Length: 196
Image (tube, rainbow, N blue to C red):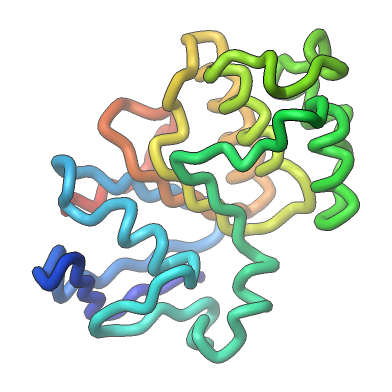
């Protein structure tokens, strides 16, 4: 279970949010909503352990994530606005690298995001949506239970959103937990909403 207790965040000297408490467990999904600048991305970074909260604490199964940052990093997959793709690699090479780090089946990840026909092209030739699909394919490698997604549908067409929906459903069915910041509807049935 992931818990955030009485969280507060500051950005540029101003309080972005304060007194925020949330909790979610295996198989659950939380949608973080709110206007631009409300702190959705900041909250995801705090939950990932990439930023420290101005107040409050984040825990996984009752243990503070600050007490074991490496352990929290191993159980977390982060998808931000940047795709972190090496332009000279192919999608197959990119996922093979990630699977050596985290485990998983690169071919299944390629197939799941409809990337097999593009598997051997240099990533620099991929469109923005194709690059986003490759970043999403990385999530499926290694079985990390916590997925933190910042605008996961950015650049995706409707068929790709359907593929994302299938990956999200499979992750939840295995007991995975998803927190996603979004301005648009996501294929996450029964997700709870946290409005910032």
